[in-house]
Image (cartoon, rainbow, N blue to C red; front, side, top):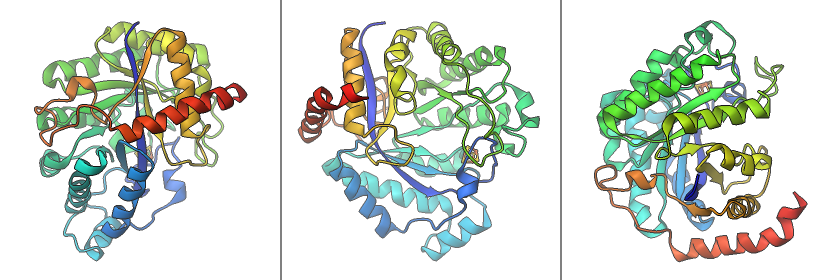
Length: 346
Ligand code: SF4
């Protein structure tokens, strides 16, 4: 492979961990419900995200919440008559500030109905909804036996609705959750067919299962790295050179070079918020990505939530800056300088 490697500097904002599903590998239900942030709190996050140099606000929430009684009660308390109206207001706030701050939205809250998508579409930049698996047997296994929203049919419907509503989408699979190996190619076929129909898939994400303490799958093992790399390579072969293949650099900082060799062209979101799960501070991670890309004669480039293939008025009527502003480049220069002192210690 040649050409650019991309990533997005992202500010993750968890709206709620309430969820209608109970996936066997997820810690959200263990952490439990909390209050939805008010608009005042959201504005504060937007200011912080801009100060930290993020290009994207990733809005994260559990799934299936439009009629959830706790969520309904909270949005009413905040002065909204529905969850969609609450989300639309947040997206409008992001839109209202992005001429100045160059912050754009990525919605990661699970499937939405067509009516909900049409309400949010005018303010929405892009979404992530994982297909997760094409193996229907997971419905009866630890991974998804308590997650009615995770059947392959329902996920496909959600992906197709995004296409119908003209929403650019990152989708993909989670590997190592008990799926039959042959179902992975079947999942690629499903994604490819959805893309042929609507052209809205902007990247295919391959996500490795990691066992989380306290979850029903805490005692499971991860896939061997070689098998993970083989799946990434199979995705690249299947989709050809034009489709970005995304693997999170944050989750695999020690594998970056081998991921590039396997066909990865996008390192996903790099969080400017340092969390307990972050392996490296973000400037060091960016420096490491840059180093690995350069070694292979590739160029590392920042991107917005939209990929180059979807940076057009058809996909984002709100308009898009041609490049990331200078202030952010300066920050990344600092990151590059850090590479000489800190990446070697990793
Ligand atoms: S749907 Fe998402 S947030 Fe909900 S339990 Fe599953 S992985 Fe966690």
